[in-house]
Amino acid sequence: DDAERTMITKLKTECGYQFTSKLEGMFNDMRISTGTMEEFKEYLEQKENISLNGVELTVQVLTTGYWPTQAAASCTLPTEIQHCCNIFKKFYLNKYSGRRLNWQTNMGTADLKAIFGREKHELTVSTYQMCILLLFNKKEILEYKTIKEHTNIPINDLKRNLLSLVCGKYRILIKDTKTRKIDETDRFAFNKNFRSKLFRIKVMTVSSRESDDNRLKTRERIDEERKHQIEACIVRVMKARKTMEHSNLISEV
Image 1: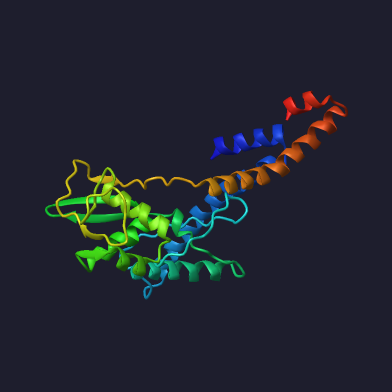
Image 2: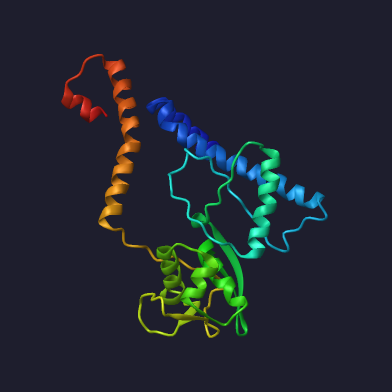
């Protein structure tokens, strides 16, 4: 923490407050979230009638505006996880009245204990992958349509996460076709024969190919976010130098 504060102080001195305001906000969010989780654990210990039923929940509360903007994607969480989220939400809003919590399910991770025959493993997966895998506790074989209806994960994200579980480095699921793509007619099953020398396994989500339209929109959004910082930098330089040639100003900025 001391090293991070020192770095921010140096950046603020060199580049100005506007350059570091969001960075300071990010570090502040992380610090406050750590304290909030400690208070939440104390709250659960004091409330004998409230339980997370064995689930360990960790929440990072991020302030809108400090962090890179992402479209919040809806997702139907498993009942046991939604129960935990509701308890935390009630605790948090009682502590900070007037605020609003939006769950960013596309940014979360989960640790799951899985049993493959005689082997036990701990899987680190995305929230979407967790929603998919927990469905197999109730049924051995699931169709793509069934998974889609029960999770409500956006189609592109659903296919990416299924592909990661079926065709990735660690094949936690198997499907009835041998293709390396996900079709709406596919059926999936839990891979009971999965074996690995590692106890803890991190399942990586395969990256998606960005379309030309999305790439252009991303570029436009980045340019818009940089615009105000560039303007502030120009004003700061000109206040210090008073007059400058255009070429020197460009190299300075």
